[in-house]
Every structure is written in C-alpha cells, then in structure tokens.
Length: 365
Image 1 (cartoon, rainbow, N blue to C red):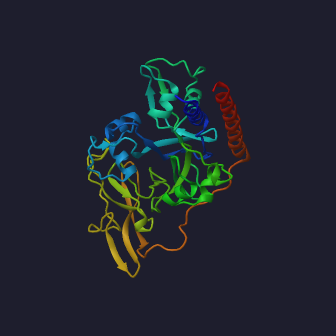
Image 2: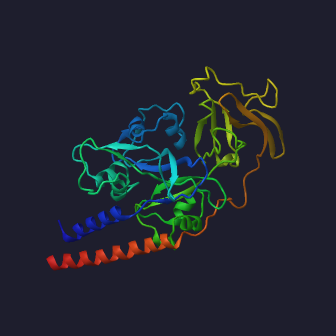
Image 3: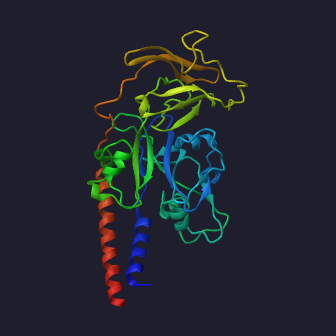
C-alpha cells in the first residue's frame, strides 16, 4: 500500500474521530423533551425491523411515519446498503445540549471497538469520544463484551427564531454543499450556518452532523393537550391520542396539519375503543371532514388535542390556494463565539496534523 493511501486513511480517521456532534439545547420548560430525527445509513442490506431493534423504536409505525412510508409496510421490508432512513426518537434537553432520552443503548459484542460502534454501527451520528464520555469510560480502548452503552444521539428542542421546529441531525455526505442541503430540506443557507456555528459555507465538512430545523405543520392542538406541542415535519405523519388519531404534514396542503381517525386499536389500556370524534356538537361531522369550501378557503373539522378521557376537535379554516412568496422558514441567531472558536480550532489542529503526516510520509519514502 502506498504512503499516499495510508495518509488518506489516517486523515479520514482523524476527521471522523474528532468532529463533535453536540447540538445546542437551552429549552427550560417543565417538559424538556421533544421528538427529534436523525439520519441512519446502514452499511449492509437489512430489513426495517432490524433498524427498529437497533434504535429501540417502541412502535414500528413511528419509524414508518418518520419516513412517510405507507402504514401497511412490512417489518421485513428491505433497506438497501447505504440507503438513508430517518430515525425518530425522544430528545432530552439538559446542561445546554440535547441527547437521546434513554434509548438507544448498545450491548458490546466480540471484536467491537468504540470507533467501530460510532462510525459504522451508528453511521457517524456520534464520535467514539462522545460515547466514552457519556458512559464514563476512562479508556476508550478498554470496553468489555456484554457492556451496555448509551448512545447519545444529537438533538435539540429549541425554537428557532421563535418558531417551533423538528430538529433533524443530518450526516453530510462528501460533495454536498450548504446551499444544496438548504434547498433539499426547505431552509436557507444563513439559517444552517447560524444554527451550526459556522462562519461560512466552506466550513462544512464531510460526515459532519448538521442540525437542520424542519418546518412543522400548523395545528389547532391546544396547550392543555397531552401531546402539545404536536410537531409534525413536512413529509411525515404521526399517530397520537393513544393511536386513535393519524396526523400528517405536507407542503402541498400549505403546511396545515391534516388529521383523521386512525385504523389502529387504542394503545391505552383505559380505552377499549377510541372516543367519538364529532365536531361542532353534531353527530354527522367527524374529524377530518370538510364542511364548506369557498374560493381559496375551506372549513374543516380539525384535531385539537386529547386527555385521558376525551379527544377534542374544532372547526378550522385553511387556504387551498397555491403557496407563494417567501417560504417562511425560521431564522436563528448566530452561533456563539465559543462554538465558532471551537470549529476554527479544529481546522487548525487538523491542518497541523496533516502537515506532520505529509512530512512523515516523505521522510519514510
């Protein structure tokens, strides 16, 4: 093997091993958890049930909804090697950053190393240093078969410029640009730069985990509901109200949350059947029904929340005219000086190590 190939491999290792994935999360409400998403790229061909098991996703239809897959998709559906899939999980905000709440955990197997677990099994969503620190492992080279590790997936519950969003941890692929990523996910370059503490688009690194704020559909869910705030990102759907209600979000519906009675059985042991979902006190108007439609507006029966006893609805009006003008994507304040300094420090350290390795290769040749 040539020294040049060795050098490339070592530099790639340094990049993957030292890039931090921590997201800022300063939410201080009593309920400091939220629903978040991360990328996952399987190194091998697998099936959806294996992905569900790896990330301990309790409900299979949550995995389907996060990816907009049909609700009749089989757990044995094949996922091709290198195919990207979104993983839904609960994020907890603490000490100024967000991490996955309790799940996933991983049990160490024979021949596992922390770098292998971070870079290959969990698709570079975390670094091996972060796993070691989060699990109080003093020596990253010393782990045992059967040892149970918590995997701190990066996430956030923060609003972005006063707007509630679904934070999505996206692993940057080689050749990607900030502009391309912004366009793909319906945001803007300044938003991504500010949210991720980057001073310019040239700061973007391959395999960097980027915090992307996904726009969520507007809803009629009130603050007293057990699922408030119900944030559903564009192209996804969720089951709520003990699985009695299915809500989906689509930009084609002008980002108005569309909810209807689901076909699932209630997940609550106190509900033998789903409560009635009549609207406006009538027995003929149900959740999701449209009552009137004039010009570019229509009035429909919208989901407004649930309690341990009831599911609530309300009449709401939405515009059916084609969306136009500004996208309305949220903006955020610039990243802290500390985060910028940290990234600049990484780049200088990377350059210094690279020069040393190049000098070493010429010395040995």
